[in-house]
Image (cartoon, rainbow, N blue to C red; front, side, top):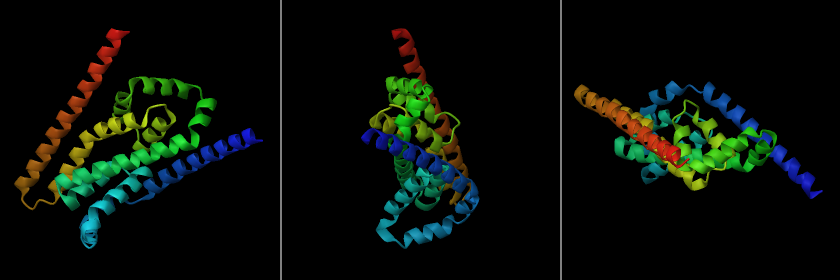
Amino acid sequence: MAKSKNKMSKKIAMVLLLIVVVGCSFLVFSLPLKEVLNQSHQIKLWLAGTGYAAPAIFAFVAALLTAIGMPRLLLCSLAGVVFGFTWGFVLSHFGTVLGAYGTFIFARWSGREFVQQKFPKIIALSQSTQTRGWRSVLFMRQLPISGLYNDILLGMSSVSHCDFWIGTALGFLPLGVTATLVGAGAIQADVSHLAQYLGIAACAFFLLTLSLKWILAQRQRKNMSIS
């Protein structure tokens, strides 16, 4: 009896996960994302009215929106417009990583065992990501896949919570820094200052991406030499 109830609860959790994925995808695609940046001034004024709570509110909202599939680069750019580069990067980076972790936790709780039983190939992915640790998370962050689906796939795998945090925090850096710099540059009244921000953004993206690729290449060579 208890076993049948356990199977039923797993099926319900899996159906719930599918509903959430489809619903969030539809919601994100239907949102007028361009209007969010167009309303950045109004958002900045509203946050200013909340006083010292503004950073916490922004980080919480960014985490919530990231968890349901909102493009994180939009949030990073908005953070740059509202808070400037330094605080904008800190708040958007923490908020988006936290939101990704929320999706990861939900996927692991709701359907991991069910999917691994029904789709054996997921087990191979699970074993691979567990072996490579945070580097596997870092590698997946470089793939041209929506962050929402990445978080769900990682939740289905056996990667540890610590490895998820490390790999995600590092993997979010190149585009996160770039988008925040672009947002911070957009509020510059001086064209020369805007050009400086865009130039720094381009250099930061290049250097950070190159560094992450070097880390992955070094790890791959080490694994090949051991095998």
